[in-house]
Length: 133
Image (cartoon, rainbow, N blue to C red; front, top):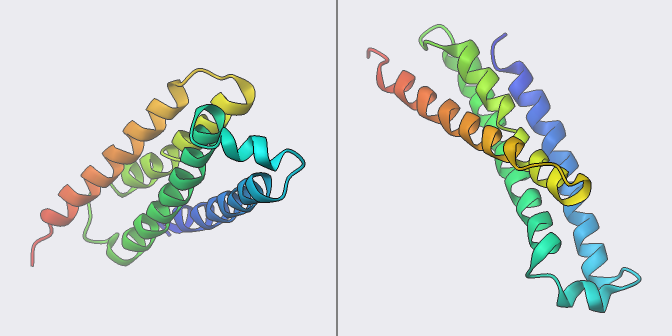
């Protein structure tokens, strides 16, 4: 079933980034150095961490929607495997941000993920546009 992996992985990714969001709230409001953490909140690693949290949930949700649409319309759409794969590769974007923050990885994963997700959505849009009524 095309799209099932997008939904499943999207839900797991959303759960992960929701948990990460709870951690960010804890660090900002209740952590051992909450005051210092909150003062540095709008810049640097704190800002990047929030970007990862927001984009992680957005890209997870997009995968859920993409997966649902692929399941519902797989018999009418072209490039179903490509759309599904690009959507999943898109998850590299928020994970790449975390990799930059915590592991010092280069931003290539962020760029690859962003390009893949954008391509997935564009190709899906074109595929829907071409459906014959």
